[in-house]
Image (tube, rainbow, N blue to C red; front, side, top):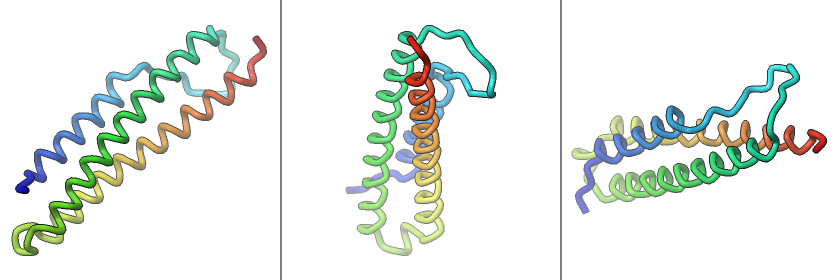
Length: 116
């Protein structure tokens, strides 16, 4: 199994960029009253959550491929610096997705508190 690490990392970055650039924008809560369509907002949150779950699953799959490749290749070919850079980049993407998940969960809770 000869995996191109740069190709895998590029795929992860493309997916990450696509999620954060193309996804519907959810409002930030700045303490201001906002008039919203609760059902429409819940549908947006549902779609965004599904998209987030798909991206995280894909990134975890790519991370596993990278870890498998790292354990199979000689140290001289797959250097520690390259391995650490790759792990750091992927782990940062996963942390960003988790932060986004927390933000979505917070929005869901706030929407649930709104009277119908």
